[in-house]
Length: 259
Image 1 (cartoon, rainbow, N blue to C red):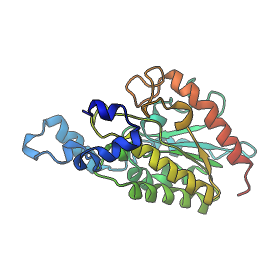
Image 2: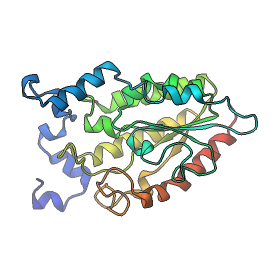
Image 3: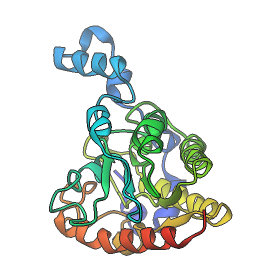
Image 4: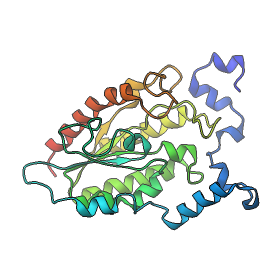
């Protein structure tokens, strides 16, 4: 726990003063725990991840049943992790009602997993726009340690794949977070800010719309207030209501750009 002195300092300076061990990338404890100490449910979870690490089965049937895009009605795919999935399934009242947007979020995923399913869950659907929101689970170490450079590489690859297929890209900032309930003590706030700054620079240099969720949502600790995210990570309906018009504006901007 930070000292009283730390509490009075800016978050960026606190990050520099933290012990080196705390500054390292996070790793899911299950990946480091001896196999013979794991519970059966934990073994089953890890086995399932090995069977289909990118979770290609999650939307395979839904994708196969999807009709071709309707001429004159641009298709939009929101691609992400639990923050996207939790917005509501495609066609639900909570997920951009009446817009016909497609939700392709999967809870817990990192950018490495998302990159592997990008062709199936984005390119093959022939959208006009993809909204990419990812990176927080990498910082939390869900699938192993991930440096900022690794996260950027995966996101850049998604952007390049989309652009090669004439799909306009909205690159979203990582949402504010000051702690992960499943991975305490990571001190993610300064890492999120640093990643977002890099993504904003990249978007500006590569004809990509940058969607800034962080600035209007962050509290003084670099996290989310409970009214916007009860657990500090996953938005409440009020949080999604704050995000929706920001996403809509970014999608409109992306649709107006020549491809």
